[in-house]
Image (cartoon, rainbow, N blue to C red):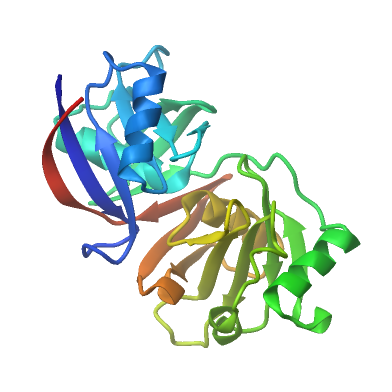
Length: 277
């Protein structure tokens, strides 16, 4: 059966500089095994499938698959799926927000002009990393222990741990040893010099399989924002850069409005058409 198909670049207003996402529309006739097989075939970090909602409070439902498994939530698939749903004619009940149903429940997405932003989900785990884990991270990044200014669990589902360094230049210079980081999902963050177009540089290092770096990561930036803003390291509005080490130029726009932290970015469609499954 033919399905509408969109491939987008998320966290970038220009194609090929952000994090790609594949979206299959009107996927109600597809089973889980078929979705998983297609996600393996695209071989992108995530592929999503748009479905009618089963929760009366939602505007649409999404299932999110990596090539290995289904995820209950992820940031760039949330923004990209919402963009694709709206572009295909989706109409939200609310004037300023879209409500997405996914594995973690209902996720609010705010429309701010052409840019979309999701409300950061609550942290499932916080607090400092234990000494043994921190030593593995220091070793795996080739750092001196004194270079880690702060460290924290920032787990909002995927299991993120994070360390803060002194400079964006040092973050970009890292050559991670993924064997040493096996089993760790690590965010590394540090400030850019004053006057830069972004206030922080972020890298997401995944110690799974042979190890890899994610280009631009919504869930990590959401939890980093809760840590950085909550600790006073960041103001209530800032821009994070991510992906430079992979020749990308992702930009994540963070803002705190009331009790909510919103994580936003531009989205552009790169491929549109249909896929026969």
